[in-house]
Image 1: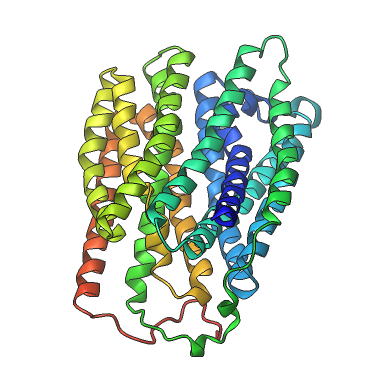
Image 2: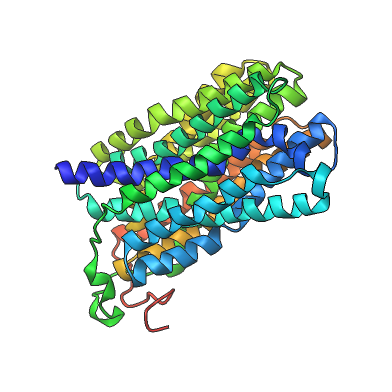
Amino acid sequence: MLQRIKVTIAILIGNILDYYDFLLFAHFGPIITPYFFLETNSKESHILSLFLFGGAFVIRPIGGIIFGYISDVFNRKTALLRAVQCAIFPALAIALLPSYEYIGFIASCLFVIFRLLQGFSLGGEYTNAGTYLMEYHKKRRGLISGLLSASGTIGSLMGLGASAICVFYQEIIPWLWRIAFLLGGLAAFWSISMRRLLVDILPENHHPESKIKDKFGYLWLRRSLVIFIGILVGTTNWLPATYTNFYVTKILNQPTTTGLQCTMISLVGYVVLSPVMGLMADRTKRHEQFMRIAALLVVPLSIVGFMLLKQGHYYLAQILLVIASSSFGAAIHPVMNSLFPASVRARNVSLLFTIGLSIGGMTPGMMSYFVDKTGLHLIPAFFVSILAACTAMLFFIYEERSSKNFLQPNKIKLFSSNS
């Protein structure tokens, strides 16, 4: 039991620190974007920072497939160690990067490259950590999944706290944000030392694909389901965590402190609710069914939440939105990992989920732009509702075909060891 706790803590701490490094920019974006790009007004700078935030998601599938391959072909421990190691350089590089004032357009290019490297690293972190934990723990996988989801948000909370400190002292110490990135890069060394305690738990991954009894089928359905899970998780997580800050401060012209409070409610709520929702999913003993119901609940919660946001009920709106995101996102890992055999599991989950998450990560920037240009304040609500309805439909089709034993044997071809 003690060994399991140590291993789980090592995984969670690594995920916290990796998300801290990656999500610092989500909170620092409006502050540091003017340092590395041509001068713009406050609203344009904020929108640009949201697009830069989403742009780092685009490269996550590349990290997902590379680290997923390492995880399947070599072992899970190696993949998790390499992912953390890759997170060190971009965080330190951003902290030390000269501004646009000194090196001009080169600063912009280098900054984008370092952000992409952060996305590449995170592409191999979260899903491989989920795969490891789901295979390591035989019970309460929903709870463990919820804790893993919450750990990433804890990293985001740490970034938000650092952002609040830097905003407070910005006039006195304008370069204080660099210290936050520097500490994130240095803390990754501690994470590496902790993850060396991990043991590889899947020696059967090295067995030929032909020796594994394959009971899986409907590849297109399972692939689509994981992609849509990624899109909906990314969308429901990042809209309340980043978009609402922009909407409250730049569209409704409320104080910056109000926007930060909205973000804080979202992050704290997700940390608290994710393990609770994961435990509830365990109680049902049917994680797929729990997620299907949660996807359906996302529709009314999102519509009412964004309507309340438009009417100025910011905090109540955030509570409803975070209930929607945590209920759907808590139990994703046992579901996704149950869809593929062990020998190709990490590659499939890492690639497909990060593809979906990349789309979801671009949503805050797109919604900010469309709402600002069109004045249609409920566009995010309709977008999330359609997405959630499609995801629930995929779950329903999958459950129906699984329950009727329609699964066809020997149909796994994606990333098979024979290809």
